[in-house]
Image (cartoon, rainbow, N blue to C red):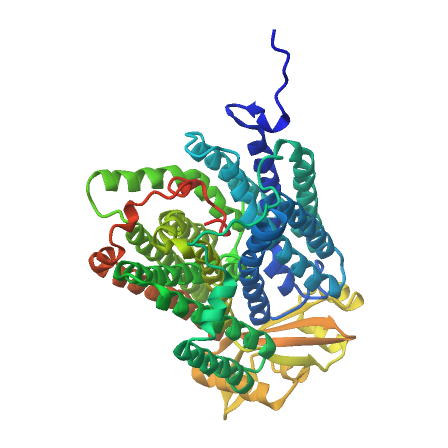
Length: 628
């Protein structure tokens, strides 16, 4: 009788290595924490300091800008995270370090202090950078080369991602709405702690994967970053281009930007290095086939940027729209805006398989189903999702609120577009990349995805009107008659935020409020704000017969009431133009790519027929941006 007991790392459960389920639950809880925090992040930045559920009290433009920087850095941090794992720690220890950084980051965010906000975000960026690019690699390492169970293993792993993301927006969103933002952040932290405990417990099942790299074995095909940069700065034309772009990177922010100047200088310098890197790689390619494929590769990166630049409005602009302008009352209960952030992973679970079957059916019929075609179609479908947001802005303009189903339809098309474009993008890029630059192109892919997220932040920020800043100059007794009767006592007794809604128009080139008492309760912080208010009324020829709805939003901070004056139609039109512009651009861009399909396919020289281990069928379960 054989009494030999298998080592832990060789044990199996339900036909797969036990380590798979350790990574499954680790990633499920990590995604729960990440997407839970993401669902409420923008809303927390917007919530007034003196609200019943107090936040940071920022204006929409600033919140969307920070959201764009944060989501960009999450992706970019994956580049050094992958390098550290490959060269120093190994994947297993890198995931451990990343997990503890995430525990610390989410925990710090739950602290009600200003310093905790930026500190928490920084720790989360570092944690995701260490964990995300490495945990998927460990899943692949559980299986020997050629193991037929490998693709099913990845499918199981990605189910964990979707379940964690779907539950996160609902649970964290509900806790944040009922008990406070920091309790929501705290719940995300609890989720990350659970995931980390699962990982710590399960390391005995993972001892054979992701180990610290042994002495590096270089081959003739290996190209290091040092070699790239050495060549970059020693080639005359490339060096000249880098110098010019670097000067522009400093000049433009210093002379044409009013905020975030240092951040944009660093950002543009980073892009300068990326351009120099891509140019150096092209110059190093020897054959026409490699150079042709490289051109298609660059277009693929552009498609990635365009796709995520539009898609990532979900956690920013669309999240704000759900909070501020959407009727979310269902069956007498107001659905928290953060709940809608769960629609994307829910739709992926529901439609992932049907979309994959559809594309396989198209391929079997002998019709066009190449990767670049799918990516282009995905961009078009995702862009068409914003048509529903155009309808939403029109309904809001006429009725004062928009129906929740517009957002549900928009997220549905965004998800269908994502399922068409995203699963094939990484596989396609890997097939096109020159062999010796394959690993480095993965880094560029993460950089392109990060740039797309930053573009999303810029688009969202541009959709918001510059704030017209005002200050309350009247006493509580003077303001109370302008408020609803059931508000007056609690607002001023507790120094709470409040809003006054009125109509405004121009008379002899001066603004007039429908209730003339309103003009006496506040003052503009600067003359330029008054001029801007008058200018916006002039844009619509506002008169006593055709007045415009205006909101005076006040927040109590720094021992006084400060606020903003919002011309509602002006802001609505900005959002309308943003949603319509995204739709038109994405459709035109996608159609142009489709029109170029034949020459682009010729330039790939059959690259799509290559089989890349582990990438072909990770497909439809992928709901996670960092992996896609």
